[in-house]
Image (cartoon, rainbow, N blue to C red; front, top):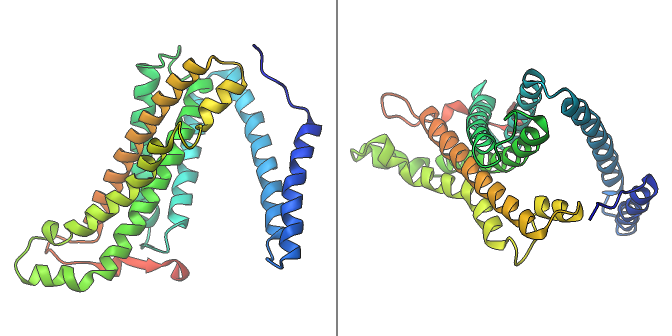
Length: 268
């Protein structure tokens, strides 16, 4: 069974749905019509350019170009994760903690999957490496951004309780443990919900895409399960690394809470 190719007219027809939403926005005075159309246009341009870049990378199959593309993806993911935080660390730390955590987690899990279960030849083949990295990185970004947001906001809101525990003789690790646990829980909750709903509530994107491309449904399911496990692993590693690094940044060697190392988004 072969996949069904789409024409540009098919895409244009689907775009009418977005235009319809823009018309509804105008009718209900939501002031979202222009934003919907701009976002849709940006999406088309960005995905078209990505498609052309991927076509070139697939033809080259160069480890250097594949690595460069992966680095660009990680750097943009770090910027997006930082932008989602209303209260963030000051200076380079606002970008470095999240980016470093995502880079380490996504790289470890992606290389592990490519060299063991998927066994691509060569293992850095961009046809496999970049899509898998993108799926892992996107979900890890969500976990890292949510966990860091919960960490810094929790430390700010519970400042009095944390400092009270310190005055009573508690170590910093013990005093901030509740905030750290809440942050890690926040980062892992989306992937847990996604796994719980997969199959019964939703058909994940990779599985759906493979089925539409003509792959046997059972084989598509096996690939989807593998990818979800890899996503869960990357999200967990990235979340734990980001929260631990963030917690260390919020404290110092004298067991003090350093909220002066935080700033509001409006201030940066």
